[in-house]
Length: 353
Ligand SMILES: C[S@@+](CC[C@H](N)C(=O)[O-])C[C@H]1O[C@@H](n2cnc3c(N)ncnc32)[C@H](O)[C@@H]1O
Image (cartoon, rainbow, N blue to C red; front, side):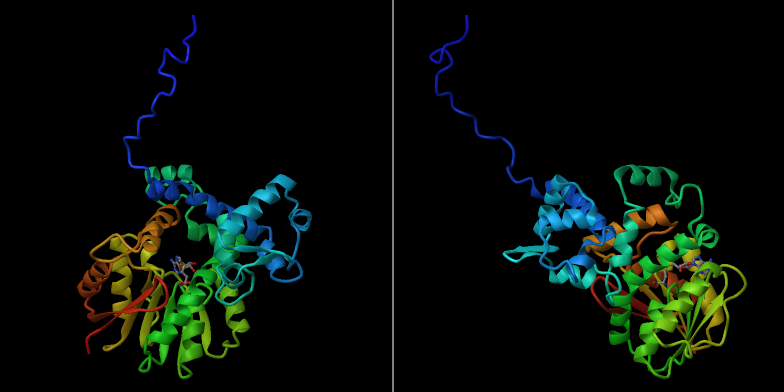
């Protein structure tokens, strides 16, 4: 016989929960990957570019027609992107937000478009992270070495260099603004990629000349960026292997921007020894990185880049203490950190006179 309401007490009291009710820190971390996925897919679909131009004020139907997404998918994506503050929904239709217009549109100086677009093909999924943790070497292109893969496949080299340019263009402007290079007349930009750093530094220092030193696949790409910046007369490009023959001499400064973090500590030490050997007495080595603080695993954005390095490279993010130790061991002195733009720092030191 079934229980009657009277049998179970009728209005049985619900026991209060015996666990903390606020799971936001964990839930937000769990759900954060969806934000990244939605943003990357919208970038790849060209949604922000379109809403920033002829698509401004579009309806949901127009977005669906433009992207080829289903009606349900479009509603979901637009709602998510509005919640993220990347699209604004108004009486006059959908518009791109100021943040998305500045940082997610193609060709906008300082935009992260290239970086976010590349993520569609190389999303750091839990599975990719598990594989990388097991392999403990670059796994982004399977077994292939990433730099050899770029030399063999110009499309990969182009996509990677565009991504790096979009990561580096804005912080490069920060270095140009906050780092006094008054006594540097010539700069060797090792692994210089698109030349983002040299372009900003030569732009801000009219007497400065620079050479991008990179692998063969990157040479024509660097020349394109330099030509677009109108600096071909002051920035050259040289093909070479930073671990091959000694680095070229005759420069007042050697720059490694996002290079040390591609390699383990031993190879980092080797790169610094190579810079030391190439520099004249008084010459400077410049390290441009997103540092993790010495006394905390912070900021979060920089600590998370450890994971990108795990998947893409043999390296990791650095702390100032670690860089200072490597620089001193290589013979440099006067280690100085300059906080530049956003999460970025420039660490510099000199070869003794
Ligand atoms: C992480 S990217 C940094 C690009 C640039 N410095 C920046 O901050 O935007 C690394 C660069 O190092 C270059 N590279 C990798 N191995 C190299 C090698 N053995 N010799 C010279 N360049 C190399 C890559 O082609 C790529 O352009």
